[in-house]
Amino acid sequence: MTKKKPHISALSEQHGVSDSEITNEAALDKLKLKRQKQPSVVELVQEILKGNISSLSRAITLIESKNPSHYKTASDIIKACLPYANKSIRVGITGVPGVGKSTFIESFGKYLSQKGNKIAVLAIDPSSSISKGSILGDKTRMEDLVKDNNVFIRPSPSGDTLGGVARKTRETIILCEAAGFDTIIIETVGVGQSETAVNDMVDFFLLLKLAGAGDELQGIKRGIIEMADLIAINKADGSNLKASKLAKVEFNRALHLYPKKESEWQPKVLLCSALKNDGIDSIWNAISDYLTLTKANNYFSKRRQDQNKFWLLQSIKDKLHTDFFENTVIKKALKEQLLLIEKNQTTPFAAANYLLNLKKEL
Image (cartoon, rainbow, N blue to C red; front, side):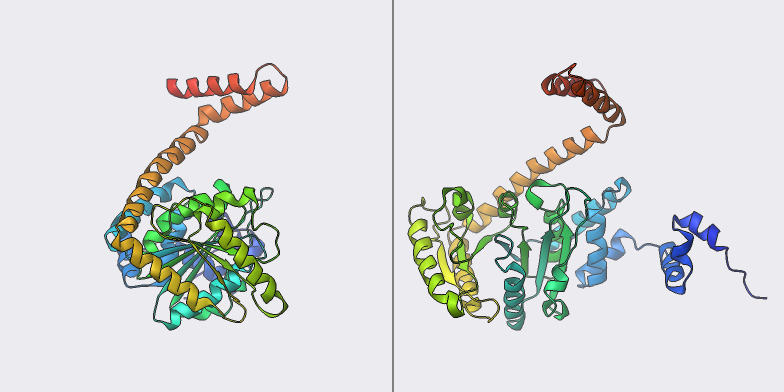
């Protein structure tokens, strides 16, 4: 006697999927997978330590989840992986849209892979402030790199976090290190504020620039240039080579105006063409020189300790922010205060004080 299949409407009701979505075999298979037993924390961690990419991706998804039920599981995974972390080189890469970040990372990643390195690329994709959606197109742009067995690419939506830095990027770094990746590359969205947050989670900060962009000496870029350990002028090829050489001279002049770095490292300006794979080796050599210097003078370990302190305070702020705005009483009171502000019956400052005092009483 054949086993009777459950009615489609019953399945859709049980799993929260529309009837139209489960009228083919592929969707039914997806529903079956949903019902399968999820791996335990111990099982996930064991597979991550073996370098299992599927388990690594599953764990990162739990970390990025906003579902409160996933928080403890994610925390347990991070805690179990922590003893196996902190063994990589973390490189932050930034630059304005159009500078060629994805092309550079693909060229850079392939170069490191050929040298025997294992690379994890954490690419932060900008989320729409309207729809909250994100294209997550880095795997498409890095079509050759994504096929490399030594490379793991994880695009993440920036969400509503400061400047576009994904909410859990730092925890993701820990998991990637535990999975055996010795070089972690973090690509920012290149919109300004995200650079500060990324700079506080990497060992080396690389700024990609274009010749003729008109910002060689702009004061508004001072903060980003001060953070940079290396400025690489990309697309230095063909008819743009002469302009790139002139830009290199200008940036070198500008760098000498800045105070000496605590690391004792003098930032460099190099030319490269990611499209033609020119200058990539020189950039890696500069990074290697930086690491040799900062590990010898103990700045490397001091910087990591300072970053841990920074992220402790940042984690407290994030938790307080979440606890405040997800409180049901506060949610209701916030709507009431916003209505009063619209009617000009209170001020934003008075409303804020009211809500903060209300939270203290809860």
